[in-house]
Structures are given as structure tokens and as C-alpha cells.
Length: 208
Image (cartoon, rainbow, N blue to C red):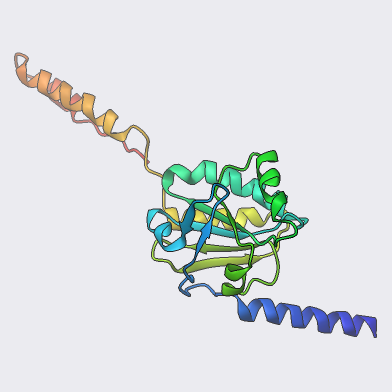
């Protein structure tokens, strides 16, 4: 009897989560929330600058600190490529005072937002925290995940990489500039019969 009850509860919970949150390819509902400094942050003004990891969490959530540690790492790793992280806290009036000490104590530097009235939580129909949505630069949900277990961050990183594309080679322009200078110097130098200098200057190097 207990097993049947547990199975039924699990099925109902799974149905609630899977059937209610925005699915991949859906347009992400827009919202505006204050950050810890009181500044208003609007989703639709954020994702044009780069894909957004939208992570709902709470101070009382047991797995949230571990997941947020990985969000910090991903933000530091891909921030220069345009990755954005927004982390709305769903702490209500009784626990919202714990949010700032929680964030500062763990040195999370990505934007943390306050959804004290749970308006955005309801907008996204979040039933469990942590819940993550990955949003592309057009505002479309490309990936979502409910809960956290060690290793989930690997899948999230792969999805982020799909949106960001291959990283640009650092210093590519600087590498090309000396080559141009060499060619100009060779053009001014006395020409030799073999033309070996021009052949060496024309060598190419692939920058992945």
C-alpha cells in the first residue's frame, strides 16, 4: 500500500512539473525584479546580450548551494563570451533577510534577484527548487531542468556551449598585424631573384 501511494505521489509530482513549466522552444515570459542593490533587472533587456541561465532557488533549499557554486564557475568561464546568469530567490517575507548573507558568505557574484511575492515563480510555474531555464538571445527557452544532482552541471554546460558556439581565438588580430608589417618591409626591400622571402611571408596559421 505504501509503495502504491509513493508511486502515485511521484507520478502526480512528475506530471505537475513536466506539464506546467515552460518547455524548450517556448518564449520565456518576461519579468522585472529587483537585485540585491535595489536595481530593476528586466529579462528581455538581458538576453539580447547573451544567453541567460535563469535559476530559481531559495536559502532553505538543500541542493541549491551546490548548484549555485557551479553557476558561479560557469559564469566566470563563459561570461566573456556573453553568458548571463540571473538567480531569482523565491524566499518569502519570513526568510528574505537571509538572502544577502547567504550570497555574500559564499561569494556568489552573479546577479541575484528577489522574487519575494513569488510572482515570477508563479509566472514560470516553478514547483521545485532549484529549477533552471536556459534562454537564448531571442528569448526562447532552449533547455530546462528541475532539481539538482551531482553531474547535472555537465549537461547544462553542454547546452550553454551550443548557444555560445566555438570560442573566438584570443589575439587573432594581433597575430595578423605583424604579418602585414613583414610584407610591407619585404616590399620595400631589394628584390632577390628567388622570391623566397615572399613565400615565407605567405605562410598561414589556423586559429581555432
